[in-house]
Length: 368
Image (cartoon, rainbow, N blue to C red):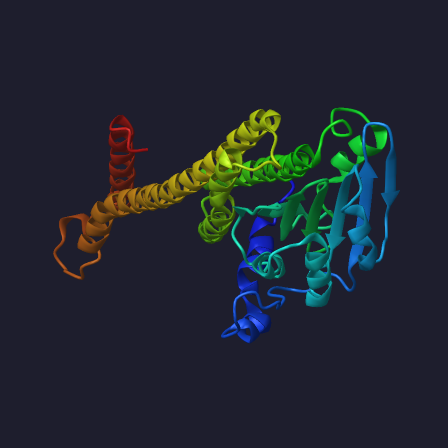
């Protein structure tokens, strides 16, 4: 079975903390632009898709200064920005699209929990994207910020590589309703791609839980207890990531904004249902791991009882044999059996009969 390194990936995420940039941010006024988190790419890349029902344009690598020109277009523009380590770039984008300084601050702070904020001119969404590294199956987590505006969607990621390729292919091919819909449906498609990928992660988690269960039943060694404990801690970290999803999707579903059309409501309800399923699955895995720990301790206790039972039966068998050997090992001169020719074979035979009788009794009692 492929081993899933959720522990390694989530441990890296958990240990990142706020780091030096978080300490630099302490004491600064609200809206100060300081990158909080790990730098995951060397330079910022801007990828733009501009489309409507009849036309489609793709610009894979544009300068940041050209993003503002897509704001006024009558078509829908998806501006995907990869790289959040340069506050100046985020400030430039924020000024071009009219983003509040607090929104720009939240984009640069990659330690945010998922949330939704509704402004007059745009809707701001923060969500965590989970992926499996192709080379070692480690779990990778990064923050994605999505801004829904009039005629545009901004997505801001920490590093190259995402789960949006399916959305891009649908836009290029013109299949489905993406090209016929507005920015709200595009934002829904991006959020749906992120949450759907959670189910891929959950399948891997399920395989890991099944493997641990098999190991506990087959060979409950001490290292399995350690793995269960670590995996349970990492699931707790994962739960902290997915727990706000339900609240986020519920707020987005109830949001009153002209940027979210009534037709998008049914899709947002589906998004909410998926987030609840993800959370339920994580909670189920946590309960199973707790049961596995109890099963492990029970298996160890049963195994120890079986060992003690065997040792007790061995001691019980040898106690009368030791008594007989001790009696005939005494150095008295007038012992009646010392001069008897068949005394030694008779004593051995008595010992053998006694041992056989005790073994028969144990088997009758189903102790063997």
